[in-house]
Amino acid sequence: MEKLSSEDYRKVLGAIEILSRDIDYATFPERVVDAVTAVIDVDMISYSEIDLGGSDNRFLLKPDITELGEDDSRYVRFVRRFGNHPILAQKLSSRPSSRPDLKQFLDRIRMLGMVGNCCGDAELRLNMGMTIENAPRKKIGIALNRSIRDFDHRDANRLDVLKPHIVAAYGNAVKATEGNAIAAKSPGAIRVDAVPLTKRENEVLYWVSMGKTNDEVATIIGAKPLTVKKHLEHVYDKLGVPNRTAAARFRVAMPG
Image (cartoon, rainbow, N blue to C red; front, side, top):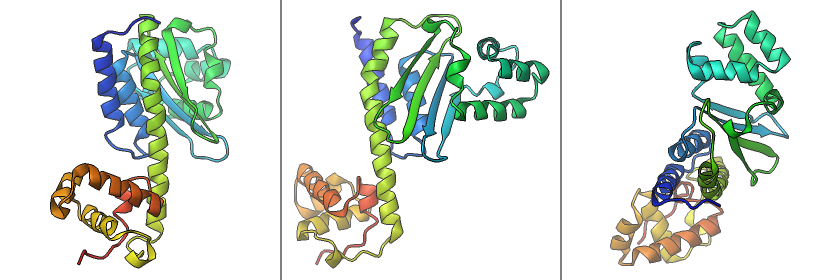
C-alpha cells in the first residue's frame, strides 16, 4: 500500500467533515459525492442506490451529462464509452441533441442495472469505485471516472481510508430517518410519565427540546458537558431514537 501524505489525510479529514454536516437520508447522495470529490479529482462521479425489494431508487451524476455541451470533453468521453452499448448507441445516434429524452433513457438503464454491462471494455484505470455493504435489500455503488489521467494507487488508498466513514454516515442517515419516523407518528403526544426517564434525564431533554446546546444545558443544570452527553445517550436508548433532533420532538414537563 502506497503511503499517504499529510496532505492526503488533510483532504480525508475535510471529506469526513462534509459527511458529518448532517445525517439526513435525503441529502446523503449529495454529501457522499461532495466528500469523495474533495479527496479525489474526477471528471465524472455517480451514486446509484437500487432498492432490490421496492421502488426507492436513487441516482446522482455529477456533472449531469444532460447539462454538458456536446463539445465538452466529458460528454464526448461519455458518448464514446457508453455508446458501446448497442441500444444506447442507437439512441445517441438517432437523437443526439434530445437531452430530456436521453436523460429518461439513461435513468431507465441505470435502474435496470445495465450500466455495468455497457462499459466492460473501457479502460479500467480510468474507472474506480466502491460499494456500501451495510444496506439490507439495497445495492449501492459509487463510480468515479476520468477522461484522460489514470487513477493510481494513491487515489485508491484515499478512497479506502474514506470508505468506512461513508459506510458509517449511511448507517447514521438510515437510523435518523427511522427515528424521525417514530417521532413523527405522534409528535408532541408522548407525556413525560409515559417515558421511563430519570428526573435529570427529563431535565436535560427539556432544555435540548428548547434548542439548547450541551454546553448551555450543562451551565443551566450545573453539570459538565460530558455528563449532559451521557444523559442524552441514555435518553436516546430509552426513547428508541438515534439523535437529539428526534428526541426533542417528545414533549416533557418543564423541570420544577
